[in-house]
Image (cartoon, rainbow, N blue to C red; front, side):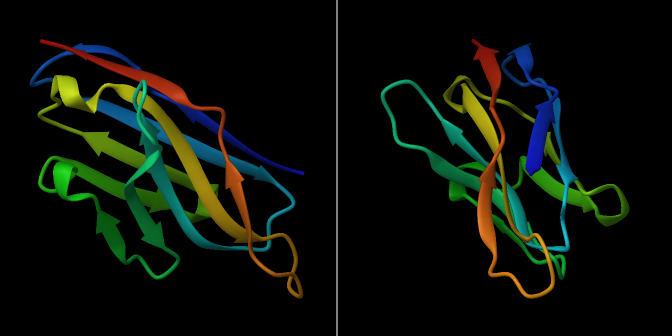
Length: 121
């Protein structure tokens, strides 16, 4: 089994900062991509940012320049530093990982349980 456990969500005023963490545990051979998605009430889940095993990052246009994704490969952990937060960033943030559980396996997609981020105006 593979588990993704998020932490770091909460309530913050507009202009503030939060740092999300996601630790992966279980039988893991290698990661392809780790990242963050978010889902606001009444909206579809959308990509926020992801980072490949080679360190290549991708960001949604709405968070570029404000959010930074990073990873600690030794600890199977991915972080999302969120600065200059806006009320529109309010959502449940989900950790995502595309990984192989053993050398000969195809990569599979895994999700965390989500953490609430609320930005007040």
